[in-house]
Image (cartoon, rainbow, N blue to C red):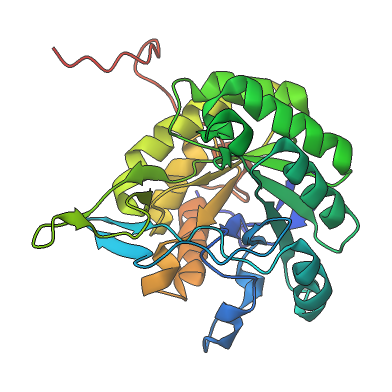
Length: 323
């Protein structure tokens, strides 16, 4: 059975109207202007754009090399290069076309106070929502990443919640023991939504020189190689979110409409597109068309019935033993 009209890809995300479920991920599209120079690209194909990670003061980032291709993925160690929040608000936001799509600020920091202050400054700006990247190291705790500690994650979310009335999206790290427990703590601290997942930590080695390829020694792994991990983490976080109606931006290796549909079925409401843009800047239109075709074939007029529709084989225990 097919629906009489074309399926609707739009959705409500924390009270924001998204034209499509696709979200361009932070760090992959700069500050939202770069891809507008690509012939055929349109922000109208996406529901939102996450701006580059922004800190209180300007940062130069890490020493090169900063990028390294790996089998099925990409390692990056940019180091949060950005001009600082004041320059972003003053010089960059006025150049963005807010009539075409939603723009989400991405906040990073090395202390709870810095997160809160950057969030406060974005609160008095045109951005539609704020994403907090809690994978940054806490300089007051010996470099331990905020996102790998439940208590510190909740502290950052609570501080940012007090600093803004805009929708607050917490970007969860997969480099932790229990992502569901972290999501629960962040939800209680005031997070309105989640991005799942951030990159996995990895390394590449130059065998001739016997040194790491990246100037930072290690970096974040993205791309198709991490998709199975990302799907599981989305499903785990969805178990926490579903009773509260809290949406998830599912991300990690989406390169096709089939990938995108897997994330919707696992529990994502929106879909983050990142590394795939580097080799196909026009991939968003293809993914949207593929999702619409799937909905037509299954007699659906919107994506909502797909979200979290995964049917598990027996009881889900999380046991990975294969013996």
